[in-house]
Amino acid sequence: MLEGIRDAVRKFLGGTTSYDVAVDEFIKDLQKALISSDVQVKLVFSLTNKIKERLKKESPPTSLERREWFIKIVYDELSSLFGGDKEPEVNPGSLPYVIMLVGVQGTGKTTTAGKLAYFYKKRGYKVALVGADVYRPAALEQLMQLGKQIGVPVYGEPGEKDAVGIAKRGVEKLLSEKYELIIVDTAGRHGYGEEAKLLEEMKEIYESVKPNEVILVIDASLGQKAYDLAKRFHEASKVGSIIITKMDGTAKGGGALSAVVATGAPIKFIGTGEKIDELEVFNPKRFVARVLGMGDVEAIIEKIKAVEDYEGIQKKMQEVTSGKSRLTLRDLYKQIIAMRKMGPLSKILQLMPGINLMGDIPEDQIKVGEKKMQRWLAIMNSMTYEELDNPSLLDKQRMKRIAMGSGTEVEEVKELIEHFNTIQRTLKVLKRRKKDVERLLGQLGGT
Ligand SMILES: Nc1nc2c(ncn2[C@@H]2O[C@H](COP(=O)(O)OP(=O)(O)OP(=O)(O)O)[C@@H](O)[C@H]2O)c(=O)[nH]1
Ligand SMILES: [Mg+2]
Image (tube, rainbow, N blue to C red; front, side, top):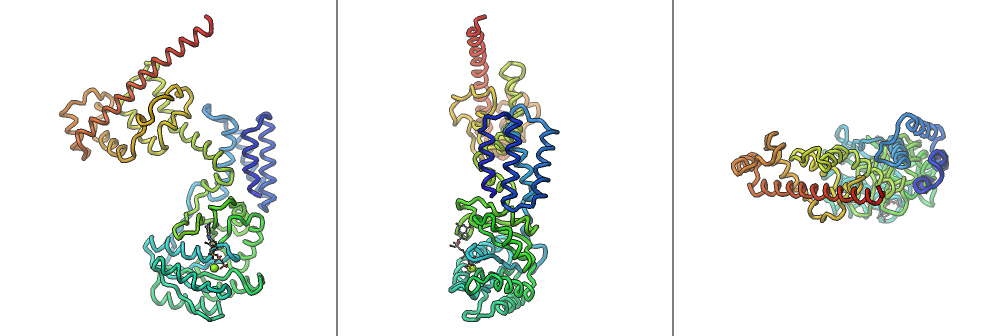
């Protein structure tokens, strides 16, 4: 099970064996977890070979622990299995577009039909639903209610037992009424759990409706069974994409990879709750982070990003505190841009070696609201290079000109400069403190 990977990550990060031994062990655990999750052996080995190759070719950045760097590589390579950096294209290529949802009982097809209708309606498409589940009592009623909630029409034939006929007539009627996006909800059970018959019906609906896309709905908790299941559905009606539901539950989507492998179809959305808007476009990296253990991996990724974004700023700060260089507004500008990408500066500072001395700076001195940051960026955009490099040039006249140019108030320009001065003062304190610490360390050294 993919769940096993999380334990392996934890064991690896917290382990005390030597790095090389731990890497070998981790790779074996990873292979075991993937293979027992029915991922093709060939694929597993190509993945682990890629990881090993990168280990040989690349070396960890100085700011990262070796073990953390290794997990980052695993994360990268697993992500590319799920589609890499990009989110999938979810807009229909041509209109009208017919989607057919398939999947076993209780996975969330009907709920997802409603969520999809809402999602596309919000994107401006003229959407309609077709209820073609004639087995579950009140299936049509459930869909009607969802439709009513979001203002999307639902085609259904209460009492009719011919699902294929309903689907065909429904899609034809809605197409003639110029609906652009039609979503067909199908049954998940068939009489007394006769799966062969269910699949036969899927095939018939598929052939008579000829949907543009078949989406397989899979429950995140499905685990190992997902592979066979996805394969059987794929044979009955060519699955074009996958939606994983109930990602909000305790299961972490272990079966997802298997389903992807079995069908070759990409995951498009994930369901994250029972409510109509709890549907997200699938993001491979976020998903893999979940598989690897959100807490552990996220912390590492965040650290890497923070380190990359701040390496430049760190260098600059060191130069400033050692007296080699002077802080300018241009540095502040870069810092704000990086901060908006990264989150609070205070958090980033904690991650940077050597800067934890700054620990007792009050939070609110470094915290700047998003809106303010945007206005400050506008202000700095209106400054000349000369002014950015030498803020002491900023007299009343210049401030007025800058406020006009950036559509802000002189007060805000002043506020920005005050903030800049605060940072400068803080750095001076830091510089003094650093000297104190160095002197203290020197004394302790006894020389
Ligand atoms: N927590 C959570 N619950 C979900 C999600 N999607 C669906 N559900 C719930 O799962 C249950 C089954 O959902 P349905 O949409 O009726 O499933 P179905 O596949 O249409 O079921 P059948 O028609 O019997 O095959 C309902 O209680 C839903 O509220 C999700 O993403 N998260
Ligand atoms: Mg249903």
